[in-house]
Image 1 (tube, rainbow, N blue to C red):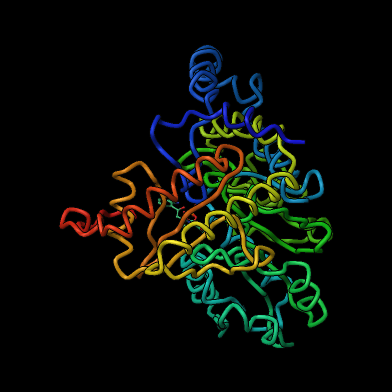
Image 2: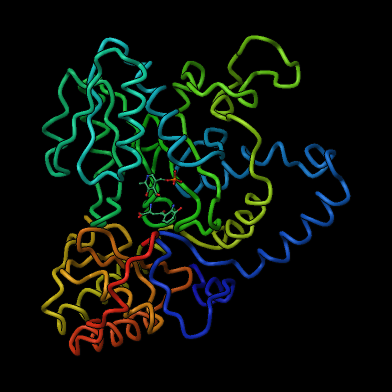
Length: 397
Ligand SMILES: Cc1ncc(COP(=O)(O)O)c(C=O)c1O
Ligand SMILES: Nc1c(O)cccc1C(=O)C[C@H](N)C(=O)O
C-alpha cells in the first residue's frame, strides 16, 4: 500500500499554497537541490568530461527510461529519455508513417495538444507526399479508423478536458485496420495506469515535468514496441542514436532498439532532478495512485458543483473516462484563476474559458481538496475575481 503521507513529505511546497497544477508542472522533490548540488560539485566539478563514463551520464537516458517505463507498462529496454516532447512526437510519427508507406492519412482528434498537431503538419508538409492530417472529434475517433489511415496519433488523456481514450480498444481497432498507433502520454504518465505492452501500442511519447515531477525543461521519453525496435527509423538521426557514436563515421547507422531514438547530448543536470522524483515514484503503486486520484477528483467535483452553478463541468463525470484533472468552463475563467492564485490555490486557465485543476495523490490529499474547494467557492460566489488586475494577461497561462 502506498504511504501517501510519506510521499507528500518528500516534496517542498511553499507554505499556504494548495497546488492543483501538477498536471502542468510538478513541484520540487525535497531531495533535488542537494542531489543537484552534489552532481555539480562532485561530478561536473571534479570529474569534468570523465563524468560521461565515471558518473554514468551517457547511460542515464536508457536507465531512467526503464524507471519511467515501469509506470507506463513498457517492456524493459524499450523507453529512452531525451529532447522535448514535441521532438519525440515528430520522431514517433515519422517512424510510424515509414512503417505504413502506402497510406496517406494521419488521424488525430480535436482534443489533442496543439503542438502534436503542429508537429504533424510540419512533418507532413516536409515529406511532401500528399499526406493529410485528419482531425475528428474525440468521440468520433473509433468510427474514423478506416483502411486509408496510416497512423492514429492521439493524446491518451485530453489536456483540456481530462477525457481519457481507451488505449487498448482503439489500438485493437487500429491494428485490425492495418493502422500504426502513436500515443502521447503527457497527461497519463503518473496520472493513470498505462499498459503499453498489454495494449499492444506501437509508439508512445510523453514528458517528465508534469505528473512525474522532473522539473521545468525535464526531458521527454519515447517508447518503441519491441516488434518495431529493429526497423523503426528515428527521422532525426543524431549522432547519439548512431550505432557507434564514437567511431565518428561519415554515414548514419541506427543504433540498437529504442537507443536509436536518441538525438544529441542528454540534459544531465535535468536528469539528476528527475532521478530524485523517480525515487519518490519508486515508493508508489500506480493502482493506489489511481484509486486516490478518483477519490480526490470525485470529491472536488461534488464540492464545486454543490456551490458553484456558474462553473460548468467540462471533464467527463464518470471517473473511468477521466484522467487525473478536473476542468470547468467559466466565461471569466482567466480572472477567476488569477484570483484563486492570489489566494494560494494554483490551477491554470486554458483558452477560451477553461479553469483546469490537477490532482496528484503523491502530495495532494483530501484535506487539501476541501481547503481548495472552500477558497474556490468563496471566490466564485462572492465574485472576488471581478477586479481589473485579475484581467491582465500574462504571456504564460
Ligand atoms: C499532450 C502534449 N503534447 C505535447 C506537449 C508539448 O511538450 P514540449 O513543450 O515538452 O515539447 C505538451 C505540453 O506542453 C502536451 O501536454
Ligand atoms: N511545457 C510548458 C511550458 O514550457 C510552459 C507552460 C506550460 C507548459 C505545459 O506543459 C502546458 C501543458 N502541456 C498543458 O497541458 O497545458
